[in-house]
Length: 320
Image 1 (cartoon, helix red, strand yellow):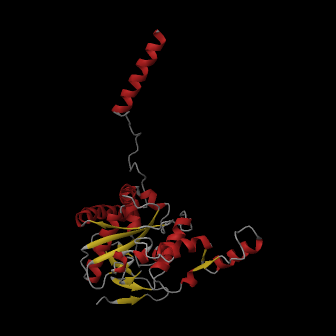
Image 2 (tube, one colour):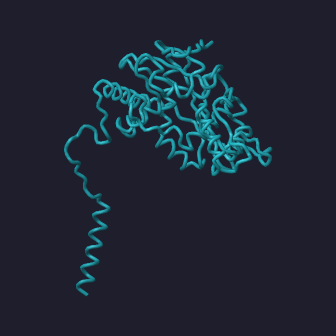
């Protein structure tokens, strides 16, 4: 049985544990723990881009760039909240009334401002319709296999069941950094975990490209590390449940292989050490690292051959 604690208002995490009731704002903020903490998104940013790429949006940067209200982030948060059964949707989100078909009027904009000041994210009816489609609740989706989560055999089997949106935290022994994860569902009966992802396409090449660029193997590996350390759960299977954000709202499960997560744990260790060093020194190098000299770049062999062929062609033209 996993022991779950509720974090009190203003309380900072000071030891390992699983916690309920942690808002997304607090999870991604600088004051969740009594020391520096980082999630898989930050580690992935540091590893694949650079420490500087992480720092510009870091909660520890007082002049950070806030990206939280981009439309795809808003839709993703609302989708997770509704589709995974989190309570009090109306506390966090509101939907534009039907009497307004846009934000053109002063009344509509005034209503939106009041909702935002109350701490709610504002959605429009089209976004709610998309969420219903991803859930598989539209009339035309009835009995249509894998159109929406309700029609997915794997989802019906319980892959997204468990402790929903709980925060798991532990302190890394080597660096002293707190590692935090927020699985969509912590498995209670086995070592199989699923994570919901929204996407624009579910063909092999598109999903492979997404996994490569966003490093979801790192996400799976970090969840596996945290569940092992805190909950005594050894993750044997990490599945990404992709659902399209537009019709036909197709669902495609993808499994991250154990070997991929094994290799990703090594990447995590390097990213953690990098983060710890940057926090200590206050220096956040860009993609070029600490190299001060100009980078020397040569033309590729293919580009050089193309230039040679073009030169020879123009010389023949001149001589003709």
